[in-house]
Image (cartoon, rainbow, N blue to C red; front, side):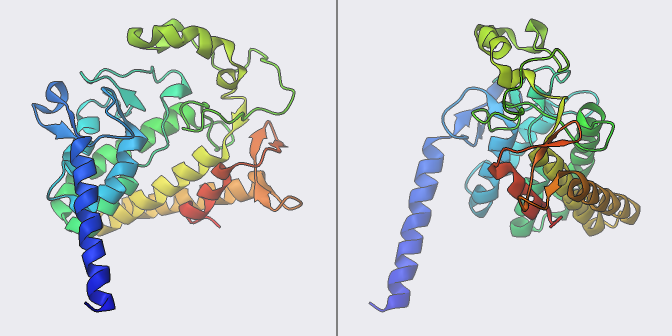
Length: 289
């Protein structure tokens, strides 16, 4: 057997094993999707998550004919709020786990990335047209809630997905300026976490800061929404989202870039929070560097 044939054989075997593992992790969602299964995200959690689903779709798209890829995204769209906001996490019955009045509900807005990744494989323009208003509505809902007066975004340590990473300045003590955690912001099934959430200073630093990862992710989402709009012939939308991407990118450069450290930092007020972390690399993915 030649080298190419052996490589092809290994790829076929890898695909089969990937499909086997993915099928073993499928989760029933009868109360959300009228029956059927959804993609497992990290484990067989009963709850389902926004950015876990988005990342899973980005690889599972190559198996879209054999796995519930599009329907896993559709589960999130079905349970979105009346104003278009899609929470970071939902119960198996489609109830938001976190209240959007607190940024712990704000997940990195990656659903447009997932949908465009799926479109690259399926070329399903009808689906893209049907989900575009939902994706744009979610983007605008995130703007209304979590964009600060200077144009950058704030978040929460758990919400941003890097919950073991302190984001506040070194030596910072809770100052009462953040959005406090309250029992009514947490689904009753997770009230056992309240003592931890209320007592850990990581979860009391939110609107006091400007978060480089979430700001760059919102710029990335604007760029992808613009690309989606262009594909759909919605040129006015495409121009508006392209302008938003450009303006937010300029703002990030202006406020978050440190010439001396040669990287991007979070902000506390107008000062850099000099903590090096992987969140700065979202500026590369966002296409603003």
